[in-house]
Length: 52
Image 1 (cartoon, rainbow, N blue to C red):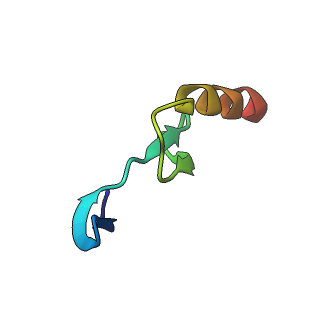
Image 2 (tube, rainbow, N blue to C red):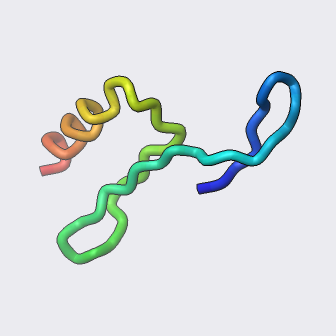
Image 3 (cartoon, rainbow, N blue to C red):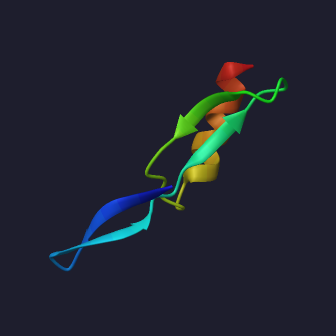
């Protein structure tokens, strides 16, 4: 996803990291926006365990 960001005081367009959880029927079940790589895998795993 492309969004407007602020880099060193300048507005620029950049990539907003987003994770989509897709259900067995092919539909989007959950969206994680503004993802930080550190710890994100654990966050998704916890979500999947709680959703089951």
